[in-house]
Amino acid sequence: MTIATRAVSYQHQETALTGLLAWDAAVQAPRHGVLLVHGGAGLDDHAKAQARRYASLGYAALACDMLGERIAGDRQRIVARLVELRGDPGLMIGCAQARLVALSEPPEAEGVLAAVGFCFGGLPVLTMAHGGVELAGVVSIHGTLATVRPAEPGSIKAKVLACHGALDPHVPLSDVIVFAAEMDAAGADWQLTMYGGAMHGFTHEHAIPGAIPGVEFNAVADGRSFAAVGAFLDELAAS
Image (cartoon, rainbow, N blue to C red; front, side, top):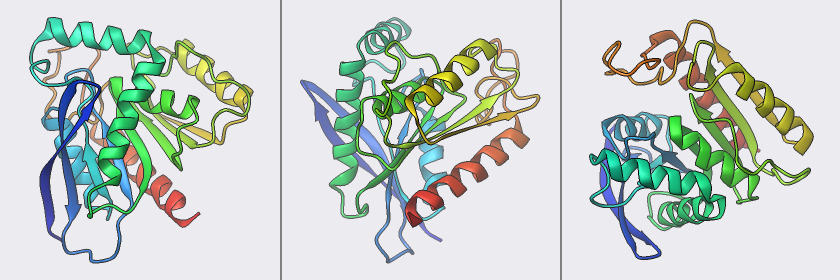
């Protein structure tokens, strides 16, 4: 296995963006593309590491940028951009679609299979599913489950997987219950796995305990969720 990476530049409206594409260069067969959407910090080391991790499963994984240049690292600008995206589902879908186009063009990827979002990134991928964007599946990992625009019956065509920490204080059980009811009302093909003892951000291996209240790495939940997403992607690829 030889994981290769390169920067991919693209644009949404007037915003120049750069993502990280990762793939196994030892795999000669065509690879399905998987879009990875970062958390609230932007395209950070966690998102880039996840791109390499999913590339190890045989996919071409693009860790995209939802914020834009000169925003990551500036807390005030990050918060303003996240608020803007959360309040405008149409803008969020447009941003995400630009990333899908960026992933569909490189020769390393043959079509886009799914979108996987972490923390904040769970909201864009679920919003894409609500908006009927053509994807085989979407995955939210310790992600935001509440939406500003509930899905209409029959509107969700993509299969949905949510991986949630049972002790997550940032996404309370009330949001999980509403999410489940929404998915059923929409007639979606969905599944939810809750990991006992896991808090928010349980895939963040280098999270400093106590640095951000409610955020903590959980090796068991991380491993189990990665296996669950891998099986989910394999199911999508086979269908």
